[in-house]
Image 1 (cartoon, rainbow, N blue to C red):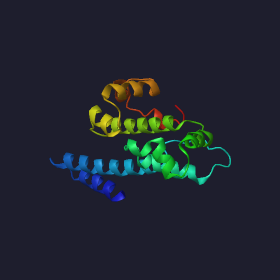
Image 2 (cartoon, rainbow, N blue to C red):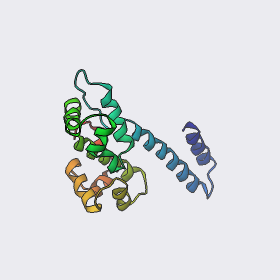
Image 3 (spheres, helix red, strand yellow):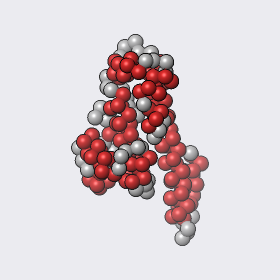
Image 4 (cartoon, helix red, strand yellow):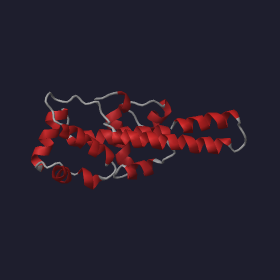
Length: 168
């Protein structure tokens, strides 16, 4: 990634008419790398209960890697993947993370929405489809419920809200 930053700085210092397109392309590459790394890490700084086991870390990693794949995030699939009963999985998650599985998944998606809104040219329709919201209206209402502001106001403000706090 440092090489990309160096290329951007070099292109900026040797500015020519085609530099804007190249710089934008390189910045997009950097953002894609960052997004990939964010997907691999936990979206939340969650307080884990004392004595929580490593299945929690593996479960969070799995959810974050597959956040855009709803069938892989269904309780039955997660339970099978992590060798837990579907009933116990929800209890296990809440006990170890102090929030429901559904809330974690939704808030993780909304953090990705923030990133897409501020750092990409994705349309609301593309973001809604990528993250499996029913439609733009569903995305907008959910976003407002959790952030306290409309998507339009959020873009105007230009500052992360959910990414800055661990609890919504």
